[in-house]
Image 1 (cartoon, one colour):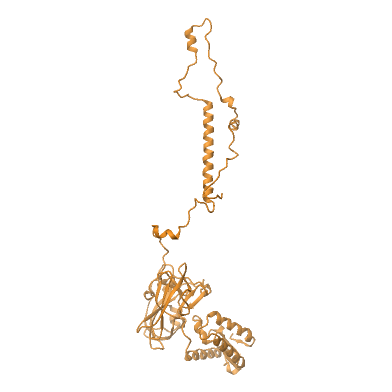
Image 2 (cartoon, helix red, strand yellow):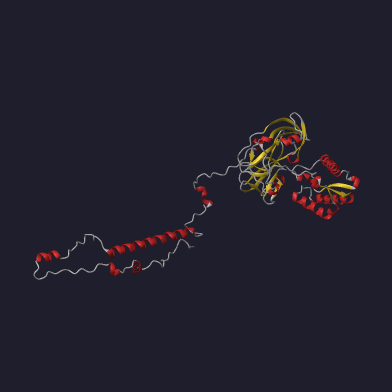
Length: 444
């Protein structure tokens, strides 16, 4: 029942019948339950006055309570029924009034302007697994859920620790700087990559900035996986920063501070619904945090200090983790810079070899050029994708290939020197597919 202000009205129910109806339901009338009037006896002639005196009605004192009266019992029963009905109606009315939207009897949210003067019990928040990023090890868990669910395989089972080993690796980057890696890998992966303790193997994790020969310092038993909810950490990476590496300090409206992060590390942008390198974000942009969003309030830039170490994690399946006590959501892959000329040539040579191995003939012998649908030039924008995956390689005649290259050159010039987003590269690739797709030859 909706009310205005604090007033409410309760109507007398129609079923509260008059007292005559109550008697009728009892099968009686008021007259049938009332005592007949008592006639006072008079002394007769010839009767002993003492007997007449004994037959006189007794006068009761007003202070004495009558033993019983049917009329009074009926009136008492009627009064009880009326009181019970009114009480039940009042209770029902109160419940309806309290349940009504906007009722003054309902609890209201606390005015934020007075909370600073009010003493509240401490709120126990849901536990979020956040540590200093340098304190993580494989087998631990990091909180975070990837908003881009297409990057997550819901049917992918976690590794079984019984079938895993912990690899301790050391690498030297092209710049000569040190890279320390710990990986959690299954025995099949270790065997396929010919990983042996004291030996080297080629590690190809471009999304982690780890590409090159890796020296195997140790192969250890798998640690026990943490049981808390969160994403399994399958790799830790400690990079010795190059002197010209740009380091950012990022402050947020909720009080969180990230003291050091490379400008190419992807943060989830609420406005773009995608991950952007933090160096391309601005003060006032919103990022995702644990169960909500917060705003970037300040970004400061500096160059790396000598010997400064920068850290990253590889997390299973979700590919994200949360940093700081406020759980700022970041992607575990780093958008590395463009590939060097030597790296591009390496991928292109491998693509030609793959084509020959699958088809049994070189592409050139058929007048074809091998084209990457997502060009090697932009492969760093897709750090999780292998540039030489079969779906990305096509054969096309050399004249058409020249036109395709011209279209990508025009795309590059339109960017004004900035790095394109994944969606922009994909849109350009689809446009080229529509224009030249009828000339493509695909690998079986």
